[in-house]
Image 1 (cartoon, protein in one colour):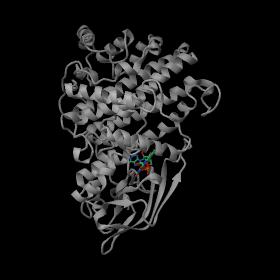
Image 2 (tube, helix red, strand yellow):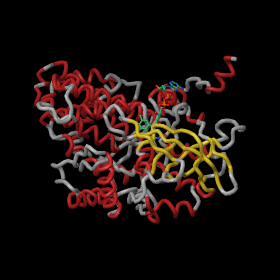
Image 3 (cartoon, helix red, strand yellow):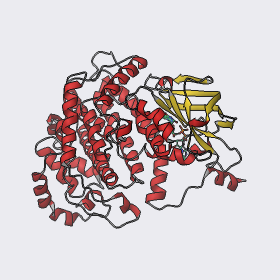
Image 4 (cartoon, helix red, strand yellow):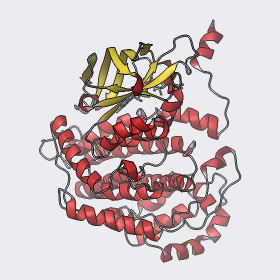
Length: 503
Ligand SMILES: Cc1cc2nc3c(=O)[nH]c(=O)nc-3n(C[C@H](O)[C@H](O)[C@H](O)COP(=O)(O)OP(=O)(O)OC[C@H]3O[C@@H](n4cnc5c(N)ncnc54)[C@H](O)[C@@H]3O)c2cc1C
């Protein structure tokens, strides 16, 4: 059955004959999407193999659009549920590598963990669980200060970095446990961790490549957000093509001197440390001449200049490194191994995305409620797009579960990580664009304006998620990865090969 969920080679006739079986299966497990028949109908439609033509699904579920608006989507669906309608794997290679069995039957430990984190959140959330929302800040510094306090509280209870070793404040648990904790945090509307670059990128990189001394020095401060981190990778001429970084690292007697400019550095203005990729050997081949450093963001020569984004916030920055001294013991890995170490950092940017999943489930839920309020369901075109958005978020959920299955079996995210990133970012842009259409004449308004459903949150989300197809690797790059590593298309020529060829 899983091959019908993800396969390109659908056999609709075969699938139809299985419908009764599917319905029986669905009846035995809890509703995934809220309650009642509309959800069941969608499940059946998805299960019988229409996924390759989401437009058809949208057409079919359009009829039940009003029902969707009334369903309470969020609370009923965020469970990892028993194995997805059985399991089957396609032949290896080619497109079929995007398929695979999903076995996410929650173990008693996972169920206990979910109950424990939810109970903690119900008791400790600074707003009423299931009703309230985090405070809204106009000032980013205040938001960060609030975020640090909240992360400290969470970490004290053991809910930050649950996959980290116990020695550094984690729980030593696996990917499914992490997924469940992230789901519950997002369900409670907890804000994104202010120290997420430390927790998700710098910390895991140090765990994999740092010396024992480096781990002891930095890791204990990460989970409670006692120190914040930033990622000093991108440069004005090195984004997608990261191997062309120009920031130099010059060796001195007891360390290195860094010089250059980094850009798009999120939260650099609040960071204590930065993980930095710099060129330590200008003679070596470009990937081999890089080294990975931890830069003290308070050191002399570090200048942080905030960049105002389209949302009006200055979350990221330009960072000038003007002869910044970095001691020898702040080099991670050996000199010249920076590309390998950075690869480990970047691998943590892909894989499953429980947080975005839950956020988009919530946005969808709110969108359907907003649509009910604005009368959008009376417009057949909007109704159809709302149904389509519903289906797409559901597909994102399935993509996540498939990737999580891989991780739980000890496999790397593989090219599925790129497929997931590509899918959710495009889905997100469509969903938020639809939200503005649902707002209609209120779409151009902003926070504080009268008669503006959501008080500007839709407009902000629309602007913010435009960046989703850029950060963590642009969608063109994800398409390249899928083309080359999944579809087996010829490899793109590296920039130096192109330059050599053009001479
Ligand atoms: C919100 C946000 C936060 C960020 N935070 C950080 C951070 O904290 N630290 C950090 O180091 N970086 C950060 N970045 C930077 C991000 O990683 C880069 O923007 C991204 O890697 C793209 O690089 P670029 O902007 O230089 O675009 P470029 O690489 O110059 O690309 C320009 C365009 O060309 C396309 N393109 C480039 N190469 C190819 C190719 N080979 N094939 C097809 N198309 C191609 C791209 O897809 C893009 O459309 C952040 C970005 C955003 C938007």
